[in-house]
Image 1 (spheres, helix red, strand yellow):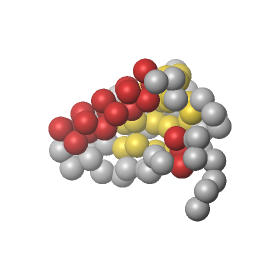
Image 2 (cartoon, protein in one colour; image 1 turned 90 degrees about the horizontal axis):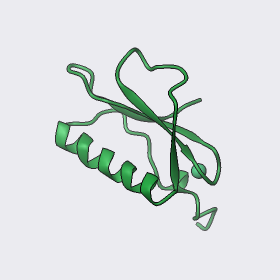
Image 3 (tube, helix red, strand yellow; image 1 turned 90 degrees about the vertical axis):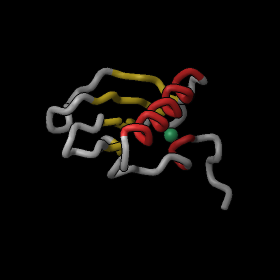
Image 4 (cartoon, helix red, strand yellow; image 1 turned 45 degrees about the horizontal axis):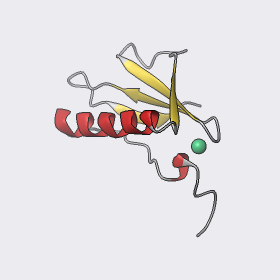
Length: 83
Ligand SMILES: [Zn+2]
């Protein structure tokens, strides 16, 4: 299927659980890479997710906002679309 392949949101999938800190850190590095490439822009967090540390990123091509919530045992972290 060919549909807006230039938008990262078609590639990124929501993650409900990071199974380890290293998995989280790997993903965090991947997101940082997308920021460095100018694909995502970090924006201020407007509405925190249950008080855990998190960062918000906006897609440069479609303005979709994603949140990366840090794991904090027993919470396993989250990567999801901000609705
Ligand atoms: Zn997008």
